[in-house]
Length: 305
Image (cartoon, rainbow, N blue to C red):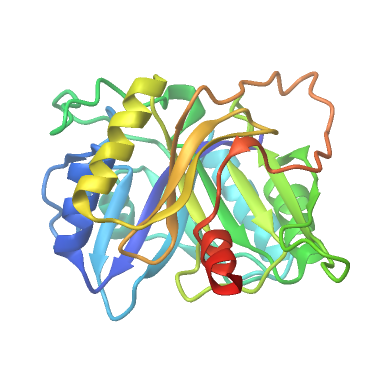
């Protein structure tokens, strides 16, 4: 038994008010019950939180939290991680309570990205009601969404997530994003957990950015809801990192917006649901079927003009 799904994101910030506006007024998340330690919690479904925003000295993704089946699975995974040479910090009851779980441990991947693994999820006592009218997010057995992380030593990180943690390869492309004869290409690993979401984690062969994340993804139920979120992004004055488009591998129609943490949030719909039992690994050579013009591409074109 491997990882069930992405459960939550822990974000450190110097801008809690900016995050509050972004999550409630752009993404459509609901403020959760106040945390006893001062952190701000935000819901997108029946879980007490999917985003935990903590005041700190930096702006970064502190940890991606992934759920496993039960305590036995958690302890077995902790031993595998420890045996691989990565640090393991077993969570105290106080830490578990702050995550609304029965038990957890913390570690880092070979690139230093923060990870938490837990079991025993809780449910909120009140229904999810979006402050901007989002009917629901696509979560449930598919989890919160996905997390995309940098992997400068690609082989080491890929082996860790596959052989130690237990994720499964879905798509292993090499993208030539810069173009030209001197583009060495960038390897990616899109990996699924034990559910049908195309990927719950993805790795990109690049240096770790100061934000310690490339992007997180939330899935909405319809294209209309994605378009509404895009309009809220524009009205709120947030930077669009990539225009609306459709990905090749997971078929997600989405756009990307820069969060107050410096990394992106992908907001999309119609993501591909796979059968993990029969899936055969792919290796696509294109990022998107259409759209997804990146801000850096636009800026480079303007600079060359």
